[in-house]
Amino acid sequence: HPQQAAHTALPVLQHLFAILNASNIPQQWHTQARHQLLNSLHHSIHHLEQCLTDNAPLFQTQQPRSPLLHINKYFADIQHFLHARNHSACAWDHVRLQARACLRRLHNLTRTTR
Image (tube, rainbow, N blue to C red; front, top):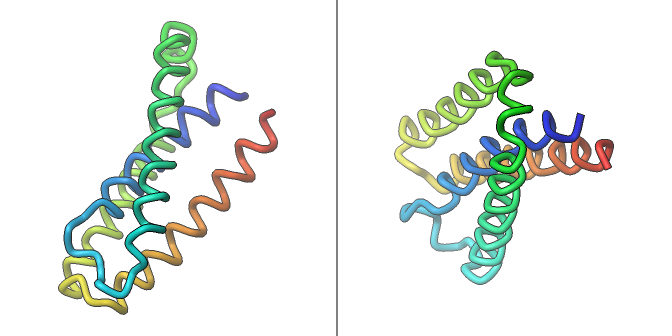
């Protein structure tokens, strides 16, 4: 269902934006590419929030809680991973790979709902 996909995608994008917007990103990351990604994430978040707000009464009755809790735990674990490794460049590289995998899964999810 497209609304279910949107409701699943929104917290993923919000968490990715929060993590990638951190001030302790490694210096070797390309600044312009990171800002373009953040702008794209922000635009997608805004678009999804508008869609979900427009359809809120219908969607709230259909939204399961466990996927949202699973998403929140997943990103809390990523934040803990970064913190435990003192935001090292190696830890950030792992997060970059996780973010890429998340974006790929979201792309596949939203592509199948069109």
